[in-house]
Length: 299
Image (cartoon, rainbow, N blue to C red; front, side, top):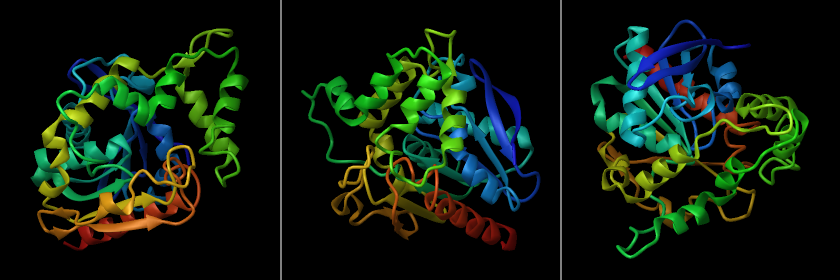
């Protein structure tokens, strides 16, 4: 099921939005820091029969790459609100993967009356202690998302070379991720002529959003301020399929929202990427969305 694509005006330009489904509760989906709406395709297909699943390319990414700063989680949340307002609906279920989890939590805090529920997918809670004042944020960013940043500086000779990059990525090699899904992801992210192809993603946007996530105290407390039903899905393995997950047990201990302990579910057989792209991650995310959609309809 191919999504409908359209644009929504936001401060600074137009966001590209993909929509699966035409009826039911609205779902707003925020992707990761160097990703695009295409990462949500599997979830959109699975959930689109029961919800209006709306996944924008966030500013500085994909076909919204021309929308510049300011960046930051609050700005992305305002952009999601513009997407919601465009539908005419008053509220939505908000879901976010990786950086998008922080966007989803921020949206819930900024627009509580517009938030029916929150689904965070391997992102949202603070990772590790606060940085000391003397910390070099760029060094920390390189340590956390260095391989993703490195990709933005590379050029590729052809479409097939860029597809091969994603097919051979450690997060997807020897996993159940479908090659057609990886190819679609690569094709949407690719820009430029043969011989000098590169990612559409703005490195400036990624660094600005990374600094915001690491330094903004409002983001560190965003989860505890969520006053809506919420769940956090976390992967078993890390960003490059290493055994250590992004969110280990210490990072998950004692997590709470304004309504009480946060429901945390570790999804077997997934890493930071395949918890969204491929099985069983997309089904686990879609299940939570359908569950909250049923509760929203019954309210």
